[in-house]
Length: 338
Image (tube, rainbow, N blue to C red; front, top):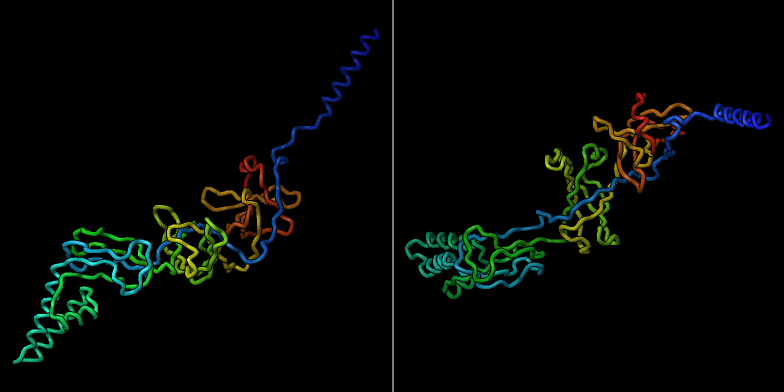
């Protein structure tokens, strides 16, 4: 009898424990939230960019006449050249013919019609100048009256020789690339924006440029152009920035980090939320789930303007005590947006 009584007591206790057990938590009770903070200081957008040559500070020198061979190359890729310095010497029968024409005019000035002789001399000199002959070469021909077939090709600007086209001894055709020179104190940075990120940017704004390989190398740049189109290959908006490289901190084709101040033209305050709190909708717009007081989470559209460490800077209609959902979004996506 005693044993039966003990068994009945145990069953009663177990039944009571099972009855008082609390129900499993709902999906909404498992979410994790984070506070919404006001963005301190000016809004900064960080982009990756690639350094490129500035076409306005670069020049490709093409062959203005054919040549039998490259006699000599006096400077090579990576060397600095001054404006007017000889880069290479070509052997050209066409240059010999042009010099012979001027020498013939100088030897026969035209006794019957001096004006006609002066006109022919001017045309012959202009032809030599168009081919690249210097004033010293023309003066040498006027003094010696001995034409030569050596054609000196000079740099049109001061800068660094980027590349050489033909090798010594090679034959040159009309229009062949002889060499390329660029002033590396003036460079461009090519960057790309996703559609919508161009909001708040303006032409002429000053930006900070930092080298990725050595972050102590930093300088300033200026936005030259925000393309009015989207690149069909990358689906991004090209951005062009000019940088002053007088100290030689940046090299073409290297990668840099660009920090761009963004104007908040709407006048609405900017906020910081964790990047993982931002969700992208089917229409490519961005939003966050906001928790206000004891009410259920609600979907709030936001504009993502930039990044600041682990957070993103957004613009939206936040309240003073709002929190955003950072985990547990999948159960919430099935709830209707407010």
